[in-house]
Amino acid sequence: MLWLWMSVALGSDLKAGLGACADDDLRGALAPLDAALSDTIKPKWRAEALVCRARGILSLDEAKRGPRVAQAADDLIAAMEAGAKGDEVDAARKSVAGLQLAAVMQAFSPSGSQDQQRAALPLIEQSIALHDTAFARALATSAALPDDLGRAAAHGLAGLTSADLDGTDISVVMICLSPFEALLAAERTDEAAKLLARAEAVLPGADADPELRATAEVNMAKMKLMVQLAEPKLDVKALEAQAATAPADYELLVELGTRLLQHGAETPGAAVMERAEALDPSRVTAPYNLGAHYLLQAAQIGGGVPSSSEQQQQVRALLDKALPALRRAQASAPSDRATLEAILVVCEQVGDTACVAQTIQSLGSP
Image 1 (tube, rainbow, N blue to C red):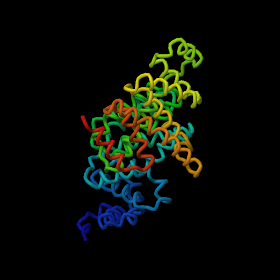
Image 2 (image 1 turned 45 degrees about the horizontal axis):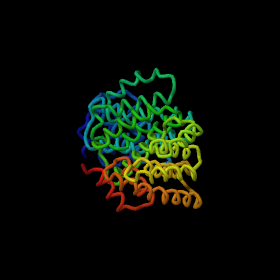
Image 3 (image 1 turned 90 degrees about the vertical axis):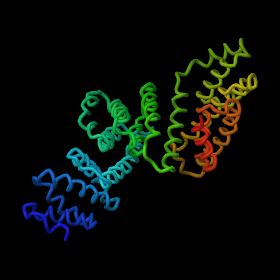
Image 4 (image 1 turned 120 degrees about the vertical axis):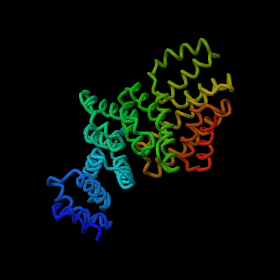
């Protein structure tokens, strides 16, 4: 038996736990390791026991695992700070990040409450600290911020700036980006834009399978659209008066059409956009803004997760309006990244995998 050579001084619980872990009996290792880690253990064995217990927690059924995921994260952080490394540590920390991602994204979605955001803060901290242990010791810089959303944004920005983040699991990048929509909803556009810009810079170096990377690309493309259309809403009446005296002013018509759409006046807004497009079909702004509007309208139905057949039909109808406008924008400017990113979102939403692959390839072309 591998563990017979251990000194009796290790204690029976520690020997039993590490032995079970070595035999891949991860669940069987939990009880003895819980008991052993409640006592003082030499650092050499403590780090190994912490990694083993984290792996044991991750092996549990969902109902039993959920309450202990945070403990698994803390165990891995402590073990890494003690020098633990290797494939088992990397696999465990990626698993923890994946489990935390859904909870964090939900907390900072438009439907998330302040209580949920407050509860999610430790998850953001843990997820980043799992990949950069120095971050765990530097949280005081943002802990003094007066509001939880500000702290979450500061955590995310610090995590995305981490020197150790390159090559890490893409789930951590998305966790760092999780406060984005809540920042936009709170009209904190500058903070949201900074977070998104940093995530865009980090994303190419993140580790992910192709499907997860494509999903992340689509999500970030959608976020860029949201920033672009989150400008202050100007007075529509004043714009209408200006447009009446300058009916051939392309920029003015685009501005008026965009604001009408934002105010919910979809039919007159679309008509103004079509007037602008007719003035100069070679320009991309009018068809792009129209397509982006329909796309964001679709993204808001059902809180972004349309559940009923009626909601799904509404989403599809808006996407069917968005794509022709975006294709016209693409015809005007084939290499325009904003247009390609919007088309990518539509293609992903309608399940057109060939279009997704082609658009991602176009985005990667010089």
